[in-house]
Length: 498
Image 1 (cartoon, one colour):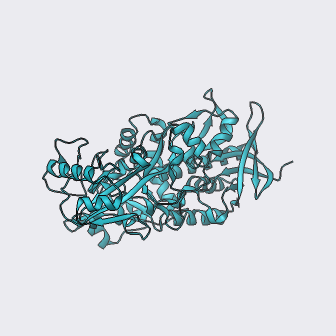
Image 2 (cartoon, helix red, strand yellow):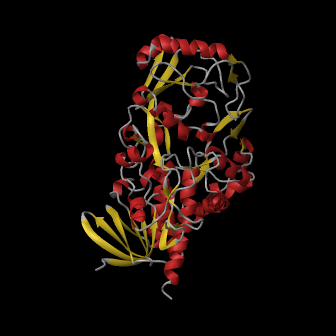
Image 3 (cartoon, one colour):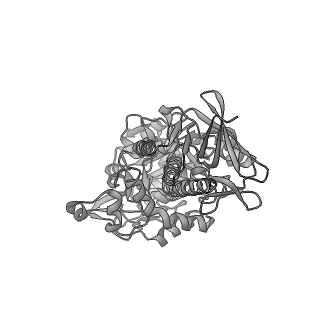
């Protein structure tokens, strides 16, 4: 016997699930949102983000409706350039090694900017230009780089707060400590119910449609080891401890098709002494993303990546994997006094693992890095730098010659002591493998047919990201496909009442 009946049940209450719940309600459906976490931990991984959204724009006039209006003075002091639909598509294709599903990417690109305006007007989300993280003051103007120029005011925490408030205003019912466990489906027919444990009690919710938005399996060490490989069970989790793959598992149990890069994930440089899971107070500030302006070495004092291969937007999500491969699963970001003013705010929190010293050897001792190895690496690096005009707002071509790995951009000698080092490890954000969906978010079965009444969005969707991702595209994809999923589920449910 059912405990309650709804037109649409949304499983998961992060950015994607909240967008789905609000969108389904706008379609006229009666909606229930199941949030596995207690209320104090609501919001999934979205709470832990910096709140950056990537979307295409042709100029400042396209950005203006998103940020709620720029003053004449603000327009005068910024140079946003443009970031076209074609550039957005190509960025995803390029960093995923041209494996991303082109139909999903096309839908993401075409719906991104309208969804940003919807989040602002319908969701009450406040956006602002991302001066602190995505711009540098050059010749008197703030110049934005890497196709990512807007962030949520108040970051992920305020994104979640705004979207919960919007859902509540719209009349979406919300249950906390509600862990969805199984989906009920008639043989060959539609999904008919969600069975869940709510505050320890078994409950069944009949429904005409289900939207799965419960995240990936990044907080499940067993699944990480099984799918990502050795030592991934040892990685720190950047966000919520509640994303353990439940939504994916439930769908696979009723015949959904697995899809995407199951051995891939988004993983970053994360403070070496951060807790095992995210800290809701610190949120994303354990990350360390200014490495293009310095060097990264391991415990042996060796470099192992090209720190200047691209803007950090296009490398940070894959370099966590490289750190996990190093001795002790740690690495060290090194800077001199010339660039400290360029480091992001996350380097200045009280909880940072940091050392400072007047010489390379003394810094090595403080960081517990091999002194001979570090001194040799930095001496060779300094000798290899080809001098040029350093410019942090463009790929400036300042590079090294004769060393491996080379540094392709922003290469400067480390020669302005005292030197500063930060200890980092691998922090996993979300996994790339998941469910196969249509561009309209219907979940497909193993034969490529739609599973009636089942939709998916957010991190449990497979096929968008492989190996890597462009910064800000995760939240954007969650909102775009969440909005689409809610509308599709709401429309399906309402049609079934006729």
